[in-house]
Length: 329
Image (cartoon, rainbow, N blue to C red; front, side, top):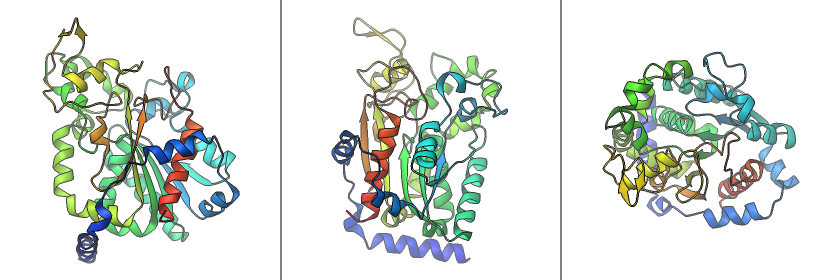
Protein backbone atom coordinates (compact mmCIF):
# COMPACT_ATOMS: atom_id res chain seq x y z
CA UNK A 1 0.00 0.00 0.00
CA UNK A 2 2.79 2.44 0.94
CA UNK A 3 4.65 1.61 -2.29
CA UNK A 4 1.48 2.34 -4.29
CA UNK A 5 1.09 5.76 -2.68
CA UNK A 6 4.76 6.57 -3.34
CA UNK A 7 4.27 5.60 -6.99
CA UNK A 8 1.25 7.89 -7.35
CA UNK A 9 3.09 10.79 -5.73
CA UNK A 10 6.06 10.36 -8.08
CA UNK A 11 3.81 10.19 -11.12
CA UNK A 12 1.90 13.32 -10.18
CA UNK A 13 5.12 15.17 -9.41
CA UNK A 14 6.47 14.30 -12.84
CA UNK A 15 3.31 15.42 -14.60
CA UNK A 16 3.64 18.92 -13.14
CA UNK A 17 7.24 19.32 -14.32
CA UNK A 18 6.62 19.31 -18.06
CA UNK A 19 9.33 21.85 -18.88
CA UNK A 20 12.09 19.40 -17.88
CA UNK A 21 10.78 16.66 -20.17
CA UNK A 22 12.80 17.97 -23.10
CA UNK A 23 15.78 15.81 -24.03
CA UNK A 24 19.11 17.43 -24.88
CA UNK A 25 21.67 16.07 -27.32
CA UNK A 26 24.82 16.13 -25.18
CA UNK A 27 27.05 14.66 -27.89
CA UNK A 28 28.85 17.97 -28.43
CA UNK A 29 29.40 18.55 -24.72
CA UNK A 30 30.64 14.99 -24.35
CA UNK A 31 33.17 15.34 -27.18
CA UNK A 32 34.33 18.66 -25.76
CA UNK A 33 35.09 16.88 -22.49
CA UNK A 34 36.60 13.90 -24.33
CA UNK A 35 38.94 15.98 -26.49
CA UNK A 36 40.52 17.60 -23.44
CA UNK A 37 42.10 14.23 -22.55
CA UNK A 38 42.00 15.26 -18.90
CA UNK A 39 41.58 13.14 -15.82
CA UNK A 40 39.00 14.13 -13.25
CA UNK A 41 40.10 17.17 -11.26
CA UNK A 42 40.55 17.17 -7.46
CA UNK A 43 37.33 19.18 -7.16
CA UNK A 44 35.43 16.66 -9.31
CA UNK A 45 36.84 13.74 -7.33
CA UNK A 46 35.85 15.45 -4.08
CA UNK A 47 32.32 15.88 -5.40
CA UNK A 48 32.15 12.20 -6.40
CA UNK A 49 33.82 10.84 -3.27
CA UNK A 50 30.57 10.55 -1.33
CA UNK A 51 28.94 8.22 -3.88
CA UNK A 52 29.02 4.48 -4.45
CA UNK A 53 29.55 3.52 -8.09
CA UNK A 54 27.92 0.36 -9.42
CA UNK A 55 28.69 -1.12 -12.84
CA UNK A 56 25.96 -3.41 -14.18
CA UNK A 57 27.03 -5.64 -17.12
CA UNK A 58 24.72 -6.97 -19.81
CA UNK A 59 24.08 -10.23 -21.62
CA UNK A 60 26.96 -12.70 -22.12
CA UNK A 61 28.92 -11.00 -19.33
CA UNK A 62 29.60 -14.40 -17.76
CA UNK A 63 31.79 -15.27 -20.74
CA UNK A 64 33.81 -12.08 -20.25
CA UNK A 65 34.51 -12.36 -16.52
CA UNK A 66 37.47 -14.49 -15.53
CA UNK A 67 36.47 -17.25 -13.14
CA UNK A 68 32.72 -16.96 -13.70
CA UNK A 69 31.93 -20.66 -13.96
CA UNK A 70 28.31 -20.11 -14.99
CA UNK A 71 29.55 -19.87 -18.58
CA UNK A 72 31.30 -22.88 -20.10
CA UNK A 73 32.94 -20.51 -22.58
CA UNK A 74 35.26 -17.65 -21.69
CA UNK A 75 36.80 -14.85 -23.78
CA UNK A 76 38.19 -12.68 -20.99
CA UNK A 77 41.82 -13.61 -21.61
CA UNK A 78 41.48 -12.37 -25.18
CA UNK A 79 39.31 -9.31 -24.59
CA UNK A 80 39.86 -8.36 -20.97
CA UNK A 81 37.02 -8.54 -18.49
CA UNK A 82 33.64 -6.90 -18.85
CA UNK A 83 33.81 -3.32 -17.50
CA UNK A 84 37.44 -4.02 -16.47
CA UNK A 85 38.73 -0.67 -17.74
CA UNK A 86 35.94 1.24 -16.01
CA UNK A 87 36.43 -0.59 -12.72
CA UNK A 88 40.20 -0.06 -12.74
CA UNK A 89 39.76 3.61 -13.61
CA UNK A 90 37.17 4.36 -10.94
CA UNK A 91 38.58 2.25 -8.13
CA UNK A 92 42.34 2.15 -8.70
CA UNK A 93 43.12 5.41 -10.49
CA UNK A 94 40.47 7.69 -8.99
CA UNK A 95 40.11 5.97 -5.62
CA UNK A 96 36.31 5.95 -5.77
CA UNK A 97 34.08 3.28 -4.25
CA UNK A 98 33.23 1.18 -7.28
CA UNK A 99 31.87 -2.32 -7.64
CA UNK A 100 30.98 -4.40 -10.70
CA UNK A 101 27.79 -6.25 -9.91
CA UNK A 102 27.25 -9.82 -10.99
CA UNK A 103 24.94 -10.03 -13.98
CA UNK A 104 23.00 -12.93 -15.45
CA UNK A 105 22.29 -13.82 -19.05
CA UNK A 106 19.68 -16.31 -17.90
CA UNK A 107 17.62 -14.33 -15.40
CA UNK A 108 16.74 -10.62 -15.33
CA UNK A 109 15.27 -11.23 -11.87
CA UNK A 110 18.75 -12.22 -10.69
CA UNK A 111 20.26 -8.98 -12.02
CA UNK A 112 17.50 -6.99 -10.33
CA UNK A 113 18.14 -8.80 -7.04
CA UNK A 114 21.82 -7.86 -7.22
CA UNK A 115 20.91 -4.23 -7.93
CA UNK A 116 18.43 -4.21 -5.04
CA UNK A 117 21.05 -5.61 -2.66
CA UNK A 118 23.57 -2.95 -3.71
CA UNK A 119 21.02 -0.16 -3.22
CA UNK A 120 20.07 -1.52 0.20
CA UNK A 121 23.71 -1.60 1.30
CA UNK A 122 24.38 1.95 0.11
CA UNK A 123 21.20 3.25 1.70
CA UNK A 124 22.17 1.60 5.01
CA UNK A 125 25.53 3.38 4.79
CA UNK A 126 23.69 6.65 4.04
CA UNK A 127 25.37 6.99 0.66
CA UNK A 128 23.83 7.70 -2.73
CA UNK A 129 24.82 5.76 -5.81
CA UNK A 130 25.79 6.35 -9.41
CA UNK A 131 25.08 3.57 -11.89
CA UNK A 132 26.84 2.82 -15.16
CA UNK A 133 25.04 0.02 -16.95
CA UNK A 134 25.42 -1.72 -20.27
CA UNK A 135 22.76 -3.28 -22.50
CA UNK A 136 20.63 -5.80 -20.57
CA UNK A 137 21.98 -4.42 -17.29
CA UNK A 138 20.32 -1.08 -18.05
CA UNK A 139 16.97 -2.71 -18.74
CA UNK A 140 17.16 -4.56 -15.43
CA UNK A 141 17.96 -1.34 -13.56
CA UNK A 142 15.11 0.57 -15.20
CA UNK A 143 12.67 -2.24 -14.41
CA UNK A 144 13.82 -2.29 -10.79
CA UNK A 145 13.34 1.48 -10.46
CA UNK A 146 9.91 1.26 -12.06
CA UNK A 147 8.83 -1.58 -9.77
CA UNK A 148 10.20 0.14 -6.66
CA UNK A 149 10.12 3.92 -7.20
CA UNK A 150 11.27 4.40 -3.61
CA UNK A 151 14.77 3.45 -4.82
CA UNK A 152 15.10 6.79 -6.55
CA UNK A 153 15.98 8.56 -3.29
CA UNK A 154 19.21 6.54 -3.24
CA UNK A 155 20.16 7.08 -6.90
CA UNK A 156 22.20 10.21 -7.67
CA UNK A 157 22.72 9.58 -11.40
CA UNK A 158 22.74 6.98 -14.16
CA UNK A 159 24.66 6.43 -17.39
CA UNK A 160 22.84 3.89 -19.56
CA UNK A 161 25.26 2.49 -22.15
CA UNK A 162 23.62 0.98 -25.24
CA UNK A 163 20.46 -0.42 -23.67
CA UNK A 164 17.65 -1.41 -26.07
CA UNK A 165 14.78 0.32 -24.26
CA UNK A 166 12.52 -0.16 -27.29
CA UNK A 167 13.97 -3.60 -27.98
CA UNK A 168 16.53 -5.10 -30.31
CA UNK A 169 15.42 -6.32 -33.76
CA UNK A 170 18.25 -8.85 -33.58
CA UNK A 171 16.37 -10.57 -30.77
CA UNK A 172 13.32 -10.67 -33.05
CA UNK A 173 15.33 -12.07 -35.94
CA UNK A 174 16.63 -14.79 -33.60
CA UNK A 175 13.12 -16.26 -33.44
CA UNK A 176 11.77 -15.44 -36.89
CA UNK A 177 12.89 -15.37 -40.49
CA UNK A 178 14.99 -17.33 -42.98
CA UNK A 179 18.17 -17.30 -40.88
CA UNK A 180 16.67 -19.83 -38.42
CA UNK A 181 18.97 -18.60 -35.63
CA UNK A 182 16.84 -20.14 -32.93
CA UNK A 183 17.15 -23.56 -34.54
CA UNK A 184 20.92 -23.37 -34.86
CA UNK A 185 21.81 -21.56 -31.66
CA UNK A 186 19.32 -23.05 -29.19
CA UNK A 187 21.68 -25.97 -28.29
CA UNK A 188 24.61 -23.54 -27.90
CA UNK A 189 23.31 -20.66 -25.80
CA UNK A 190 23.15 -22.65 -22.52
CA UNK A 191 26.94 -22.85 -22.61
CA UNK A 192 26.93 -19.05 -22.19
CA UNK A 193 24.40 -19.25 -19.32
CA UNK A 194 21.87 -17.64 -21.65
CA UNK A 195 18.23 -18.53 -22.22
CA UNK A 196 15.66 -18.01 -24.95
CA UNK A 197 13.55 -16.21 -22.33
CA UNK A 198 16.23 -13.53 -21.98
CA UNK A 199 16.52 -13.12 -25.74
CA UNK A 200 12.72 -12.78 -25.99
CA UNK A 201 12.86 -10.20 -23.16
CA UNK A 202 15.21 -8.13 -25.36
CA UNK A 203 12.81 -8.21 -28.33
CA UNK A 204 10.91 -5.20 -29.62
CA UNK A 205 7.44 -6.42 -28.58
CA UNK A 206 8.48 -7.09 -25.00
CA UNK A 207 10.33 -3.80 -24.53
CA UNK A 208 7.75 -1.59 -26.26
CA UNK A 209 5.01 -3.09 -24.10
CA UNK A 210 7.02 -2.43 -20.93
CA UNK A 211 7.84 1.15 -21.92
CA UNK A 212 4.20 1.86 -22.78
CA UNK A 213 2.83 0.34 -19.59
CA UNK A 214 5.46 2.10 -17.44
CA UNK A 215 5.44 5.43 -19.28
CA UNK A 216 4.21 7.64 -16.44
CA UNK A 217 6.52 6.14 -13.83
CA UNK A 218 9.50 6.33 -16.19
CA UNK A 219 8.78 9.98 -16.92
CA UNK A 220 8.65 10.67 -13.19
CA UNK A 221 12.01 8.95 -12.71
CA UNK A 222 13.48 11.01 -15.56
CA UNK A 223 12.33 14.18 -13.80
CA UNK A 224 13.96 13.23 -10.51
CA UNK A 225 17.17 11.38 -11.43
CA UNK A 226 19.93 12.83 -13.64
CA UNK A 227 20.16 10.32 -16.48
CA UNK A 228 22.19 10.13 -19.68
CA UNK A 229 21.60 7.48 -22.35
CA UNK A 230 24.44 6.56 -24.69
CA UNK A 231 23.96 4.92 -28.08
CA UNK A 232 26.53 3.76 -30.59
CA UNK A 233 26.35 4.04 -34.39
CA UNK A 234 28.71 1.87 -36.42
CA UNK A 235 27.08 2.13 -39.85
CA UNK A 236 29.77 2.67 -42.46
CA UNK A 237 32.53 1.69 -40.02
CA UNK A 238 34.45 -1.56 -39.65
CA UNK A 239 32.88 -3.78 -37.01
CA UNK A 240 32.46 -7.39 -35.96
CA UNK A 241 28.73 -6.62 -35.94
CA UNK A 242 28.46 -5.60 -39.63
CA UNK A 243 25.88 -8.29 -40.62
CA UNK A 244 23.58 -7.23 -37.75
CA UNK A 245 24.12 -3.57 -38.61
CA UNK A 246 22.95 -4.35 -42.15
CA UNK A 247 19.82 -6.11 -40.86
CA UNK A 248 18.79 -3.12 -38.75
CA UNK A 249 19.63 -0.60 -41.47
CA UNK A 250 18.07 -2.33 -44.48
CA UNK A 251 16.35 -5.56 -43.44
CA UNK A 252 19.06 -7.51 -45.28
CA UNK A 253 21.63 -9.89 -43.87
CA UNK A 254 23.94 -8.75 -46.65
CA UNK A 255 23.69 -6.79 -49.88
CA UNK A 256 25.48 -7.64 -53.11
CA UNK A 257 25.27 -5.18 -56.01
CA UNK A 258 22.55 -3.34 -54.11
CA UNK A 259 20.34 -6.43 -53.77
CA UNK A 260 19.53 -8.42 -50.63
CA UNK A 261 21.23 -11.81 -50.53
CA UNK A 262 19.05 -12.90 -47.60
CA UNK A 263 16.11 -10.78 -46.49
CA UNK A 264 15.21 -11.20 -42.84
CA UNK A 265 11.76 -10.99 -41.28
CA UNK A 266 12.63 -7.57 -39.89
CA UNK A 267 10.58 -5.02 -41.83
CA UNK A 268 11.65 -1.91 -39.92
CA UNK A 269 11.57 0.78 -38.86
CA UNK A 270 15.16 0.77 -40.04
CA UNK A 271 17.76 2.68 -38.07
CA UNK A 272 21.47 3.20 -37.54
CA UNK A 273 22.78 0.99 -34.77
CA UNK A 274 25.74 -0.32 -32.79
CA UNK A 275 25.15 -3.80 -34.21
CA UNK A 276 22.75 -4.87 -31.47
CA UNK A 277 20.75 -1.77 -30.52
CA UNK A 278 19.19 0.75 -32.93
CA UNK A 279 20.20 4.26 -31.92
CA UNK A 280 16.63 5.41 -31.34
CA UNK A 281 16.05 2.36 -29.16
CA UNK A 282 18.88 3.45 -26.85
CA UNK A 283 16.95 6.61 -25.89
CA UNK A 284 14.38 7.22 -23.17
CA UNK A 285 11.83 9.94 -23.81
CA UNK A 286 12.79 13.12 -22.00
CA UNK A 287 16.31 11.92 -21.21
CA UNK A 288 19.50 13.62 -22.42
CA UNK A 289 21.50 11.46 -24.80
CA UNK A 290 24.92 11.01 -26.39
CA UNK A 291 25.77 9.42 -29.74
CA UNK A 292 29.07 7.53 -30.05
CA UNK A 293 29.91 7.57 -33.75
CA UNK A 294 31.79 4.49 -34.98
CA UNK A 295 31.30 2.55 -31.74
CA UNK A 296 29.75 -0.92 -31.77
CA UNK A 297 28.00 -2.79 -29.00
CA UNK A 298 31.05 -4.54 -27.58
CA UNK A 299 33.91 -2.08 -27.63
CA UNK A 300 32.58 0.11 -24.82
CA UNK A 301 32.98 -2.73 -22.31
CA UNK A 302 35.66 -5.13 -23.62
CA UNK A 303 38.71 -4.94 -25.89
CA UNK A 304 37.80 -6.05 -29.41
CA UNK A 305 38.99 -5.15 -32.94
CA UNK A 306 38.07 -1.83 -34.60
CA UNK A 307 37.92 0.14 -31.35
CA UNK A 308 37.37 3.86 -31.97
CA UNK A 309 37.47 5.29 -28.46
CA UNK A 310 39.75 4.99 -25.47
CA UNK A 311 37.51 3.49 -22.78
CA UNK A 312 39.25 5.33 -19.94
CA UNK A 313 38.85 8.69 -21.65
CA UNK A 314 35.25 7.90 -22.64
CA UNK A 315 34.39 6.90 -19.07
CA UNK A 316 35.97 10.04 -17.65
CA UNK A 317 34.11 12.23 -20.15
CA UNK A 318 30.81 10.46 -19.41
CA UNK A 319 31.23 10.90 -15.67
CA UNK A 320 32.19 14.55 -16.12
CA UNK A 321 29.11 15.11 -18.29
CA UNK A 322 26.87 13.34 -15.78
CA UNK A 323 28.36 15.27 -12.87
CA UNK A 324 27.62 18.51 -14.67
CA UNK A 325 24.02 17.37 -15.08
CA UNK A 326 23.85 16.36 -11.42
CA UNK A 327 25.02 19.85 -10.50
CA UNK A 328 22.25 21.35 -12.62
CA UNK A 329 24.58 22.70 -15.34
